Amino acid sequence: MTEQNSVQLKGVTRANGNGIDNPAFDFEDIEESGSNKLETKRRKVRLGGYLSKVSRPINATEDYIKAHSVIFKSIVLGILGVGYVAYFIAACVLDFQRATALVVLTVLAVFAKSYELIKKYKGDRIAECCTPLNTCFKSNLRWLKWVFLLVVVVLLVCWLALDTSKRPEQLISFGGVCMFILLIFLFSVHRAEVMWRPVFWGLGLQFCIGLFVIRTQPGFIAFEWLGKQVQTFLNYTIAGSSFVFGPELTAKVFAFQALPIVVFFSSVMSILYFLGVMQWLILKISWVMQITMGTSATETLSVAGNIFVGQTEAPLLIRPYLQDMTKSEIHAVMVGGFATIAGSVMGAFISFGIDPSSLISASVMAAPCALALSKLSYPETEESAFTSEKNIKVACGYEQNILEAASNGASASIGLVANIAANLIAFLAILEFINNALSWFGGMVGFPEITFEVRSEIITTYALCGFANMSSLGIVIGGLASICPSRKGDISSLVLRAMITGTCVSLVNSCIAGILFVPPLDCVKLFQISDFNAADTNIKKCCQDLFQSTINNGTISFEGLWSVVANVTTYFNECCLCCGSSVAVCN
Picture 1 (tube, rainbow, N blue to C red):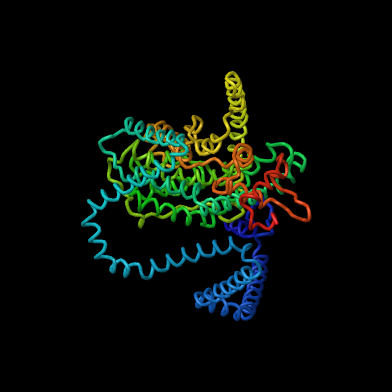
Picture 2: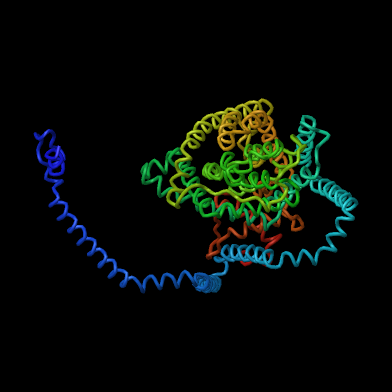
């Protein structure tokens, strides 16, 4: 036993005295290895001490910066602010007209930031000062509501009587609005529980936005400018699609020209969500709708998000709250998705040649109308847990950096691109068939020029600004059910009603456009059939347009649309006689 034990100590693998010594486990080797390790450890300690001495100033500097991070942050922000002010002044001095967009954006940013600071630091004090006024308002709220409603109705009737006197066809669109409201009310789930405040306020906001965009010069200019900026921004897609598909296909083939816009826009929207820009903008829009319409914070936030993103992305803003939302709120969330289009699809539509300002205004107008009609179709009968926005936090994306956000946004658009391509083939073919059929029927009675475009083009733009179709049913059920599996039953039972209501929202949108839209003046036709009377405002407008397109370099020439008009010189002379006594080109 003693010999065997000694053998085991000398060599671990020797058994019954017949094994082979394992030199790796000799005591001499273990002692030598231990001394090497000790020496290595001492070297590491000496090196660590040296590095510690070298990095001590760096660590001290880092600790100092952390301790005074607020001061350093203020200094950096101050430098950046001074730099921007210098840039802003230089841009305005060099060319104020060119810097108009910069001025508008700066004013809006300053106003928004000032409002936030005032609300944060002086909000409670202002609320205390306004307490007597608020108390007086609440005590007289009952009769004030009726007075306000009466004034609105009288103004609407007077406006319709005056505005439609020259264009009676606008009353058809007004009748359409009334018809859709009546139909939705008749098929409402709880007709006796309808709260009319969100209905009237939603339709009122929709009408005011449309009036501002379509009828007022500042609104038209603002949305036209915005549409041009979006168009310019989307043109950057050419750089990527030309590299992938080649410049010839990108310039000539529609699929390689328009559909990459969806990929680009989807990627950009994902980046904006990662940076928190879209969340901030959506919160501001939802605040306006919430205080006027009285809807809950969650449903309003989701519908406001639908102005910019699709029907499955917007509910992600309120993902943590979906399981506790009422059926009416979930119905409103789905209606908002069906009634609007995503920004990526809007970009594709703009590339088709559709008026950008009409698309943007239609998407904005659809949001309050979606809330209004959703509350008419499925009124609230439960107690909402989200009547205040104080406990609502906007969800952000799960991406870790901007590159991941850009990549995920581009990948998510692949299925959407295929869906758009398939629907375009079908709908453009159907539109061509309808145009030819109308032309054939019109030709039988002497009007072969009848087609689906004239005034109908603008109205149809508003009507088609939505996702209310059968294929979207599966998208909504799959998307919302994956976000909140516990409410899949409610989602499935409400989705068909939500789709029908979303369709009505788009149709009401088009009716509002039909009420407000005034076809552009056909100056050539006017010159052909009327006398040149200086008292006629339309003649003045057309002559002014002709003067603006005139070039006088010794000889008179014309640019733009007037360059190809027959008898344009005759029209110019007549305009000079009736309206051009003070115009330089006439002298």
